[in-house]
Image 1: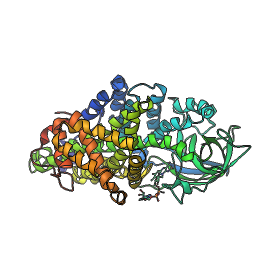
Image 2: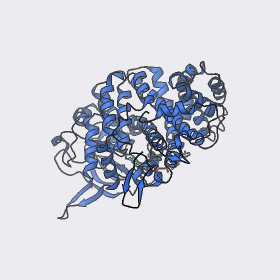
Image 3: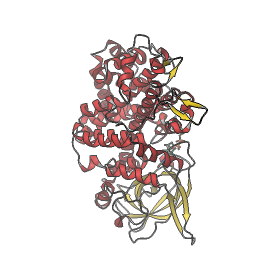
Image 4: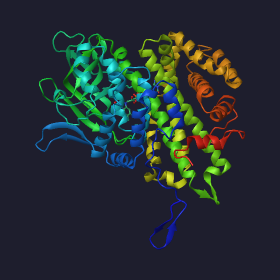
Length: 555
Ligand SMILES: Cc1cc2nc3c(=O)[nH]c(=O)nc-3n(C[C@H](O)[C@H](O)[C@H](O)COP(=O)(O)OP(=O)(O)OC[C@H]3O[C@@H](n4cnc5c(N)ncnc54)[C@H](O)[C@@H]3O)c2cc1C
């Protein structure tokens, strides 16, 4: 307990020490176990190095600074020339530099091997605990590669830049830079989910066709990280909605013809810039066939969706760490909060949710590794599990963050605790890359159009069901109602997908989680001995064990 003098009026007491200078990786048992189980043990040295950095006072302070000093729009230079730049605080550059240097945007493509996406996912989870905003350009640069490879000559030119581990923040033509970052522009004013409603027009400069140059005229309503060097964007070409690579600079070294109109004033994610832009006959190059835009860019979206799942799990872990730390140092009525029965129920329930999120997110990352290596079963599982988990983990994140915040009492509502920032960030992963309902509808699409994905999902659930009769019973009922009555399936989609997420998480927990966590999960989430808020686990749960397992600093 800190005992320090605050002026002459009183002693400061019963306040926790700051939670800093600890390794966010090695302190996270479910994450460490998942990394080893899912095939990424070989990369633990790198993940742990990032975990050490992310928990350091230096990076924490940079995260605070980057959020307190959000990017500013600079449309013109002092002579009146358009520059269309977002100016970032040095703390942002330093954080992004750390992420790039540690290859969070590139490692699975540079060194494809079993566990590569798991390793990168775990490292991404660690880094995001220092600051989540940089995850946006990191994730988009990581995700652009498979979509870009649709057009080999564009990939040959851009891939080495995107895979470089040098962070080069200069706004200058990409061939002059040591490394480049990628963004994505799909959403327009009249539709984000419905990208087929895009009105941005693409006209071929010469004959058109895959890899050829077009001119884009129109706008994007959300385009994050506008300082990126190139973006995949959707626009209407003669053959329909198509995917283009749009660079900031043209090959002849001129500023490309686009304008940054505004930066969004956002709820959270404030260190990162999200812009509105207009294209005025901007140069762009067709990726894939005309009319195949959605099919092409979905390769990118599928990877950013994985990062949304990882991001949701990260927020939960960060909340759990702060809540346990605070309540392990704060006494109320003479007893530590972490030892009071009702608070132990709240903390343990948050831990259960966090562990379920972490192990399912990393299991999903393994499905990416295996699917890319040609494993069909993994491809089917990834297809459906990504949408299931994105829906549920991201949907749970704001409730989880709100409850974790309350574990710190009034301190949790105050900015310098970091909890308001965590809370503001928490709804974003659910909106990004297809919001909650869109994920549910995607699950339905998968189960109806690709029934093998549903079979792969139930095969994964069944592996755990043999070990726990509660899960077995839950899975059997779920199987009967999935998809069930097709006339009502859309109306029921959220309930079905929620149950699918719980059965999948349950299956992973009974096989791989801590037994006390698995037991609490099955008792509450699967058999219904649970309330509507966190902190409503049944009395028989081993609360002390669960909390000790999740404590960021043991002892
Ligand atoms: C901070 C931030 C950064 C962003 N950055 C980018 C970016 O870099 N690039 C980019 O392209 N986009 C970006 N977006 C946009 C984001 O991807 C979209 O906002 C999101 O996909 C939702 O689209 P929308 O806003 O048009 O909402 P809408 O499509 O209008 O959807 C509104 C609501 O309706 C629901 N809904 C949609 N269809 C159905 C249906 N058939 N049945 C039931 N419910 C439905 C959705 O789930 C959603 O909840 C960003 C958004 C934010 C908030």
